[in-house]
Image (tube, rainbow, N blue to C red; front, side, top):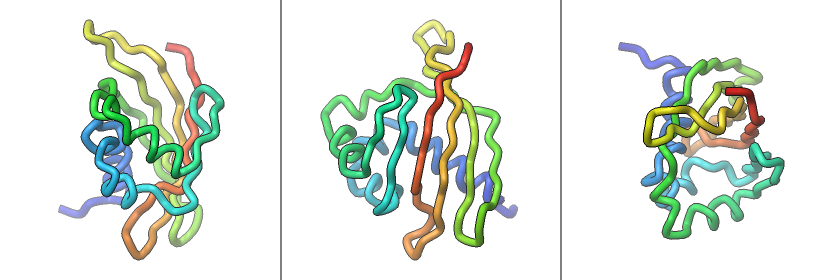
Length: 125
């Protein structure tokens, strides 16, 4: 079975939602491009180092459960792809909270696909 670009990048996005990945600095180093930046849903701008430091704290492995759907991918260059999707935190009762529209710019490098830019925008539940 052939894995599509959407399948590959969706798997990487979902991996980034996992507490075990966030707490693994070596894996985060591999996934985040050297020039990574993020504009969070709060409006905060995060650098690569600030993101790595934030996820290095002991609570990073206890990340909230995240539901993500409506993934789409568009090539924007030979080595660049834009991924869009929506996500929500899943409460203990299964309800969705903090619905967010997301966009990620992934760049193919010698190390594989790396996240170059990410933005989250609050949305209505």
